[in-house]
Length: 269
Image 1 (cartoon, rainbow, N blue to C red):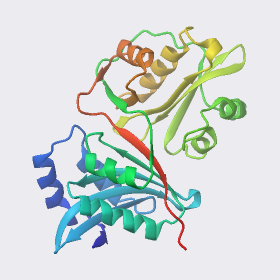
Image 2: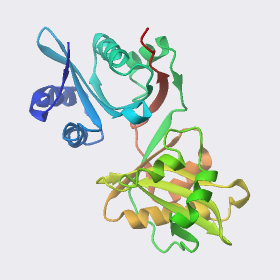
Image 3: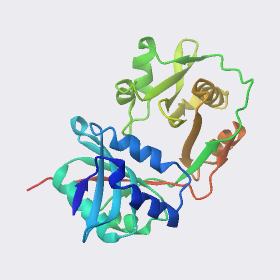
C-alpha cells in the first residue's frame, strides 16, 4: 500500500530504525523534513505491508516539465521498490524520471535495468574540507541579462538543468561566468539555499582550458557560498577534474558515490 507522507512523525520511527542499521554520511533527516514541508514540489511516499512501513521515498515533481527525480530512497525490500514503480507509472505516465542512488543498491539497480533505464557514469562524492584562500578571480562575473544568451548557447545540453532551466530557477541556483575579452568562455552553476550547497555543472570552452578559468570559477563559487558547506559529485574516471577539486580543498568521501539512471515512464493505454 502507498501513502503520501504529510508529517515527519509518520515516518520518524522507520527512519530511525533504518539509519541505525544502515548509517549514511548525510543528514537525510533534515532533507526529508524539508521535502515533506514542501508538498508543492516534493512528494514523499511511504510503502506499507501489513500495516508496517517497508519503504520511504522522496521525489521532486515538476508537472509542467513532466519530470520527476528521486531524491531519497530508504528500503531493503524489492517489493517496496516494485510498489513505488507501479505508483509512478500510474501517477506520472509519460514523465521523464531520474533516479540518483547508491551504486551498492543492487535491488534498485536491477529493477531499473528490468525497466530499460539508461545509466550515467558513477559519481565520486567530494566534500570541501579546507577553503583555499588568495585565488585570483579576475574575469569571473555573476550571471546577468547581458550574458544570458551566450551562457545558454555554451551550456551543456544533454542534462535536465539546461541553461534555460537554470535561468528560470534563480530561487535555487547561483551562476558565475568566466568572461574573456567580452566573451563568455565558461560557467559554474551552484545551489545556494542549503546548509551544504553543490555545483551542478562546471564548463570551460575547450580553447580556453588550462588557463585557470576552472579554478577561478570554483574559487568564486566557494567564496560566495560562505559560511555554508559545499559538496560535489564528479565522474569517477575524470582524473583532471578530481585533481582540480583536490587542489581546491575537496576530499573524496568513501562510500558516498552515486549512480544516476534515466527512464521515461510508459504512457497509459
